[in-house]
Length: 378
Image (tube, rainbow, N blue to C red):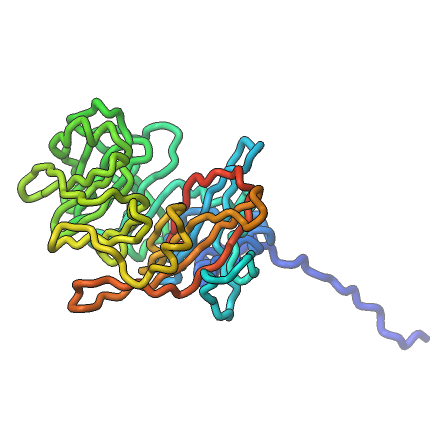
């Protein structure tokens, strides 16, 4: 008589699939992680990759207040038809140093511009404008052809989905925009001879667009470099180094004084900063309507030597990119990056810059071309 019990069949269930997890949960979980993990997570599954590249994750990070500042840089290599994207990577838990006065400096590995894989390039075609009322607004960028409604809107606390705002009077391709007194001003992105609707303003309360007066052919035919609100007016700086403004109360355009030639501008805490023609960093004093030198940056200016590539707002601080040929190696060029804290002193009459760190972030062939860069809050 066989007293041994019959063998039990062991059944194993297949491991859970990511596809069985609701998309909202995946979005919420990924949104609270640092984006430095995203390139690796995008390789885990197609679901993760799809979510990471979606606009939902951007809105979720905005909702959970987990956004971070990221510098993206686009470079063109000699002999290549397509440009390459890089992002600034900073090694965690490291003390960053100022290496401006060091001889024969090379990339230390603490701060680097690292290549972004093609599938993870920052090609989400929107840029965040800001918040008006209880809604977030984005603007479609890098579109191939004009779109009827480049303005996108998302309700605060919604399911992280963007929807189109009402159609504008004129389709636009890559316009610029800013928010002033709860209204969204959109300009450009159309033919220069479109005088009637070259600039429009959107009122979220009435959900309607209105055309602004014609600013004139000089502004319409130029390249807009920056648009920003200041003291109840919308300011526009163009490629001709002129600064225009639109006054909503008087419903008129004007030309603001420009006492110096400036390049590579950015807005930080409502103040306009720029790299000047005399190899110095400037800020615009709206009270006296003049450009003034940012003090304390003499060593940085000496190292830039009129080769500043870009100036950007990096989380309330000024980020500067410039390049410099390697000593004794004419075929190589170092790209430098520096982050500068800004302080008001002397009763707000002076602005001082304090270099927090400066180092080589990438070595490139001297024949490279700097195309553009942008700081994204993601």
